[in-house]
Length: 162
Image (cartoon, rainbow, N blue to C red; front, side):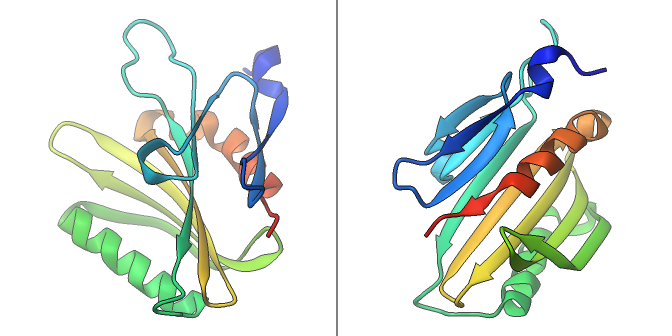
């Protein structure tokens, strides 16, 4: 069930005019949060909700070590396996995705921790082997499907402007 504000999408354009992305009107944009270009946080679902599902957009300058999409993807998956070790559960991987019209890689996985289980949707592209654009959706596994359709609309609306 989507309320009226969840159906409305607003457009975010970063101050440097590098990217634009549409996001649900009831989500909060936080430019520069945690080193990301922007993070969008879902609304709290009541007083007992202590984790905001979120979507982050990261732009990475890889010009000092240029790599192809395949090389970047292999390294990204390897890093996830290192971080989560035996708690990394791969759900889906797609090498034929697109992001802002560029060939992209998509990864959906679950990372189990001692007190929680989070699910992730990640997609990225590499432009001219010097810039990587990465979008990550993070949610409690139990809440992942609730916001997934909205997140997919966000990803589909993502534009690289430079």
